[in-house]
Image 1: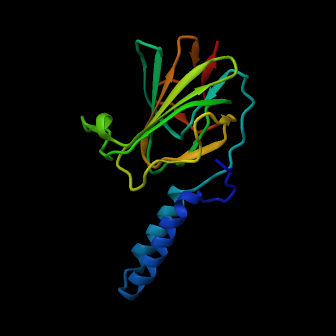
Image 2: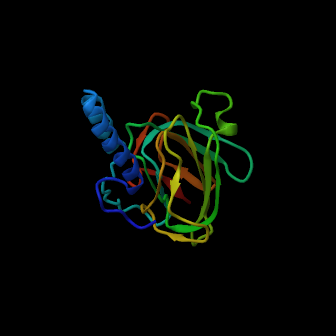
Image 3: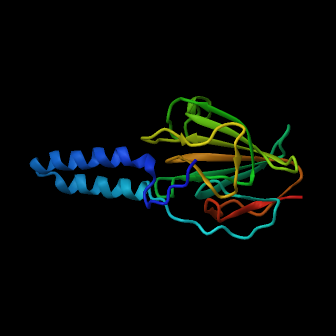
Length: 206
């Protein structure tokens, strides 16, 4: 994904144009204040702040999203831990690469946009699975799942692409991000922690 240095994510341009057109129409109907609020809201949702990358160690993993850590659980299988992060409309929607790595797998599944509290959300909601592997063969998986959102998950990367930690790779508005981590990982977050994409340390591979 080419870095966008504009203060607004390019994925939001089309929605902002629609909002401006609605503003013009509603101005004739004396609803301009509501239209104005919608434009301001979209500018807020699609804001694209610059982030100063912290000097973490080589084997570090940073958060791919802004949000709050919902849960940390031990699981069985290829991965030992999973960390769930809840992102809302109030959070910056830009997705960022968690570690310098090769993108081994990308699997996007279109679907519904139910509330995370729905029993069907994890089965049918739109989601994308990404698997990253660094030069030391350390591997992690990131699953982005939409909640109730007006926009699909937008990605600007592809399989077998080399990615740099902290670089932008997409946009997700209102979703749950699950990070799957192997046994040789040392966590640096706890439940309730507020995290920022590329700035907050999730932990290290040992």
